[in-house]
Length: 294
Image (cartoon, rainbow, N blue to C red):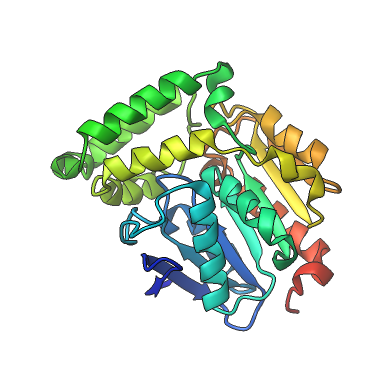
């Protein structure tokens, strides 16, 4: 994937990544919060020969610049998504979102449903993620935690020498797997590559985005969406529980549902051998809608 920069609607600089096969049906990957192009590696490897692939960093994170005027609301990220689509001339792209990316795509489709060829949601929720995470309503606590982070943490670059050490990353993965937040099949190399960049994030911006994410809700539009959709949840996902995926599927006309047994919030990098073929099958079955090249 090659990187270029694009100026969004309010002058904010966005880092955009493009690869795959030019001229084929476009696929836009929309990140989870704290994720970047590295997290999509199982998908870019499998889809590159058949699709024109695009991804962008959210404003204020990784390679993109801080927001110049519009802030960090979910609808702002949705407008960035639309700007990327328009500036690159992508006609009715397939939108694949993970976690926060699901909410960004839903908000984009609130205003532009006809501009989407197909929708794939991975471990997402239509909104208010803190109200259902870990089987409890943690909305108030989550806002307090991220408010403190935003006010007192600026950068975590001092962690860089530590977090790049393989033993530390592996120890972190062991902790999250022991707590049931990830499965033992997690792709550790993706987490190592992501961690090396994550420590450079402005955690003030990160926490602000998280607070906007917690307040966002697009459940009201689910029943209005007439687009081919595949909704994927993890049977062991404690952050966006599978019942939220099932809720979306029950309200979206004709949506397909896949619950991955044992999959946590990181199902796409735990069970790519299950999810990626299902995504390819879904896109092949919806050939008229997405104009999948032969």
